[in-house]
Image (tube, rainbow, N blue to C red; front, side, top):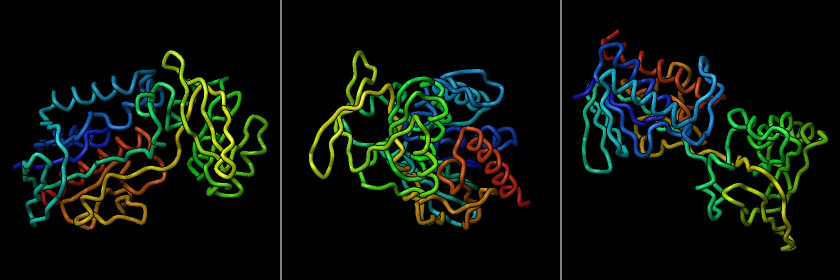
Length: 304
């Protein structure tokens, strides 16, 4: 039996493992894909305190090396269920293995909604981005497109407009679903324009770099081309919490309904990182959650 089983090997989950081990608790991290989560899509990380610049993969590798040096165990497998058996929590995985723990930290993260276009996945981190704060600087003085029309897309476009020569919003609906005032303020900027009622049919590249998007008007079928250097996809996030809703209350959007204390309604089950209901989703907030959740789990185990 482990003291703490952590579901998810992103910055939140690995920080939780670090703090668990530093407090003398055994810890197991279950990660279904690659350790590091969404941060591995960033070619350069320049907004983490004390780090001038590193790639997302470098950051993830250093965290993984650190927690393993501290004695944390790691397994590459997907957790499929958490069973609350009172003082014992049982975590089931897709390969049929079951792990017992005194406490569980859910740090499953989120995945970005994608457009579903050919070659899209391969371009993530090298032409396709999701975070203007993280990657906007790489497109300074260039032309970028932003796919989406909700608040996230409008906010991304606002940040990018301070850096880029031109920002083009491409929205499949005839209107924006985000806040009216935010949209109005954005479209008043000289280097921002919007293309509504339009879908992106393909991403066109040369030597692996994005050069243009093929567009199509939904109402008329008219086609066109948008020359650009990069594409920011802002059509929503999908929290990876559905399998655990029996022990973690979810809000209307599927995020774990927990506050800054990272506690859930189930004693001994905690939540950390992007899968938690919160306003800001950055590396710094993820690692903060990991520390808070781990220390809360340690207090729970110690009966404090």
